[in-house]
Image (cartoon, rainbow, N blue to C red; front, side, top):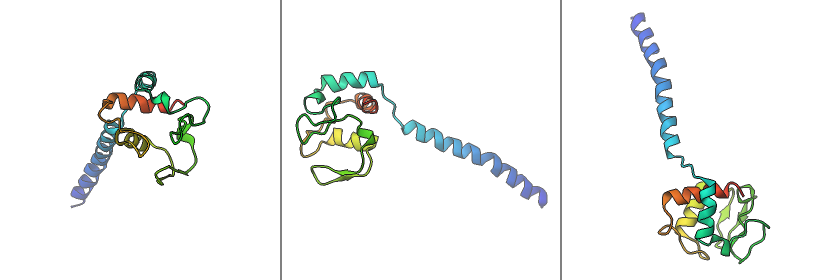
Length: 125
């Protein structure tokens, strides 16, 4: 009986790391990584620059915010009344693809790869 219990404990001890490792692999598969150099090209080609400043921190065309240092901003309210506690990749993905009251959606214009690249570029600002 003790042998069975020990065998069960040994099996559990072996399978837990395997299970945790597979969960980590699944999470990493869901994390997208873009190329910030290509993202800068996406920013330029899709004319994000017309409304969104990346150098001064001041809006070019309100209510379009400057994107400079955007991931380090304190909590604030958007024009549509939504409160942003912290900027995240998923938040930007939603805003870019679905648009806002002031910005047309870009979901039909950008591929997933281009969107990943653009978000990677935003991290460099």
